[in-house]
Image 1 (tube, rainbow over the protein chains, first blue to last red):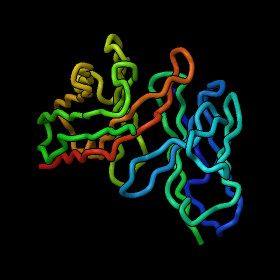
Image 2: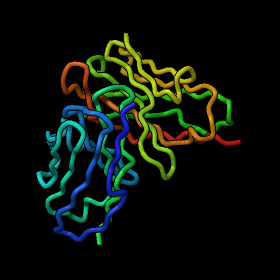
Image 3: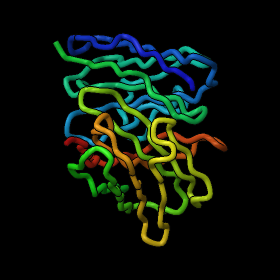
Amino acid sequence: DIQMTQSPSSLSASVGDRVTISCRASQAIINHLNWYQLKPGKAPKVLIHGASSLQSGVPSRFSGSGSGTDFTLTIHSLQPEDFGSYYCQQSYTVPKTFGQGTKVEIK
Amino acid sequence: EVQLLESGGNLVQPGESLRLSCEASGFTFSNSPMSWVRQAPGKGLEWVAGISDSADRTWYADSVKGRFTISRDNSQNTLYLQMNSLRAEETALYYCVKGEKESPGHYYFGYWGQGTLVTVSS
């Protein structure tokens, strides 16, 4: 199975800050890497697919980059509504594995 | 608007069975691969099972292989997860997820339901 290692596990940042979350795959997955946002009481939603494609309707302050084994999610100017947990996930092969998540708190 | 409505979650004892359902609307169900993903309390996301659009292929996490069965009824726009021999550690919120095709053989989880809670406890 492909292991996905995410860092940090949590972070606290101020509104307007640039936030970066990293994700590393245990083997090359080309660009088959996706990012999801989870908030309590709401359905999870996809932010980025294919490593860098912004899902329709997602604010442009979110961006993704990387290929092979190393990937990054960047929130360019953190907003109050961006609190929650973020997960990377590889769609290269089965089982479709997730990172352990990053909890984002607003200072 | 894509809607995925899960049902069937309940409190059951270890070793018992449960069947989850997911009613889909707002898209052509028979064209979409589907999956179940779960999240145990205080834990991360875990993919459980997936099924192709025509139901000719299914995939399972090793942890549920042989005990869970994913299926679908394209005439009823409904996805199912039959769960047998449930374990306490499988207490979780179970999400129904619509796959979005990215390239041949690859898809991401484009739409999620709100989830249905399964509690396994004596």
